Length: 299
Image (cartoon, one colour):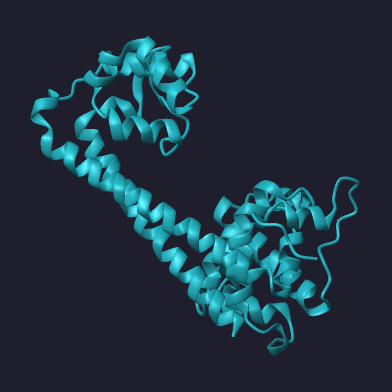
């Protein structure tokens, strides 16, 4: 029953992620009508136009606070440098001087309509921010419940792999199901639909083309995500990634290959009930698990 429970939770969480992503796009579109330059200021550098972002994270605490309370350029200009500093200190926004300078420059360069003519856009922006925060809170609740359920399973072995987070591990674990039903990792790869299909016309041996995309789409997405994470954050598998890149493989194909590599590793770990092995002085699989959990793990 635990596989089904995790499936319900992870799939519901994925639905919330998709809804929040749509709201993000809508929110950006609405705010673009209010203050276009807030999302990036175009400047001329060496006779080339470059766009400079004000905030590295548009959805960070400081950016969201300004979107909620000071969405228009005229409101930021009214605050000025001293007002922005006071605001940052009052709400612990940690806005640096460089960011304040960018904000004021973007506000001065704004070509938006006067705030009096944007009542409907401001109302819609406020509602979308509320929806964004609501979905974000829901996602955090799903994360906690997924963790509570997942730590009771042998899926914890998957967390011993550097670069694999809790949600990705839970998705792969529940979509795979009972590992005793499979004889080899290749069966899991086919279940995910990430197995390459041989294209052949004539007597020649043919060649490997695209993946089959047949089977469990939820598992396929999780495998791709795992491959992408491993490519960026797993030093143990870095040689495999480098070898594929030197062969001229494109990023998406590398992520799929890395994901399939992880499926093989996951199959062996779950089958043999053993953690990930890496002969590195700084690697400890117990610490690797604990740093990925928000709550202490019972002994």
